[in-house]
Length: 398
Image (cartoon, rainbow, N blue to C red; front, top):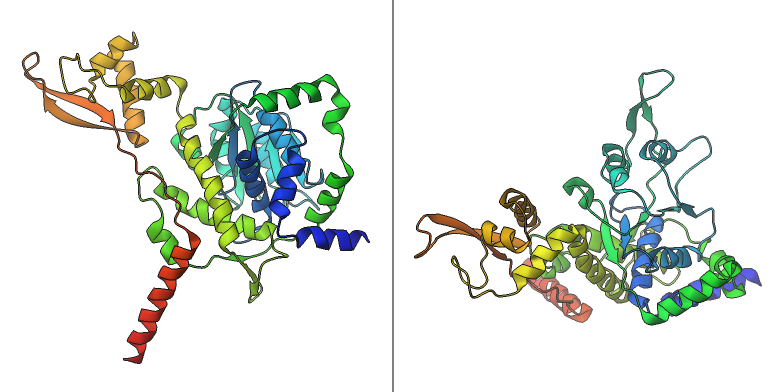
């Protein structure tokens, strides 16, 4: 009977909505947030993915429910598959991820609550969050370098209120920003009043746990990769996300593996997986803004306004001195912030003549014109690919 219920659930075309509705018993009105987290955690089921594709930082201001959402999603998995820790040092994590006798990270996900910025930016954490290879370390007892064998690379889910990452770490983690909602406040308040509500697992959740624990790691084939690459946004800020986008599609297919067709032992992703991945990708693109410091975000907000009463440049161009005066900051510190924003592709600069007030050349900064991310319908992608195949077949006949 239990096996029949498990099969019925995993073959249900409405599986994603069933999972989201179960999570919404704890947190309200966050469908896109829940869906995105489900896909990142489902990366544990994909064999042929990049090591860092499913690393995600769940961000919101303190007390706005980011940990409640992650825990509510993680509750859908057995505790031996969703490993949760409130705090961990990078050295301990490095040895833990290397595995030990009888331990493997296969089909598991790791969640660390409120990780410090110092831990996030340290070299050890950078290495373990982006590789499945052996890690060399010096043991404290023998004082010699030893290779730690890899116990697998799980999806790493972190929660943080303040984010300021190094460039290398930034490439290894997506950021999912959680917006607070009034309904969510109410449900969080109710759950905080009685602690047993937080640990309570409904009979429906038990069935979901049993079903998801039966899923295995699979290889996933994604059709129309060529067309996806051509239709993907080419902006410098976003083009590195293409590999992660493909892996999110694969994660959705792996979650729905009992419903997907197979070819040579691999699962084939379909239109539904593409549409789910687009929702998650939009959340990731929105989260890029929050990888900047709060001061840098304030600078961007100021630069989006138009100041017509300026001595140099037009209303959309700003000098270092003008911005430094607005923020009561030393010009040197302002320039460092602007250089960082320029590296991120958020702003650009050019050299102009100062005009009647300043005759020497002056560097001005302005907001980069963003290319909006447009979701290309799957039928358009499929039609384009079939057209290319048709032309290729005709060429071969000639």
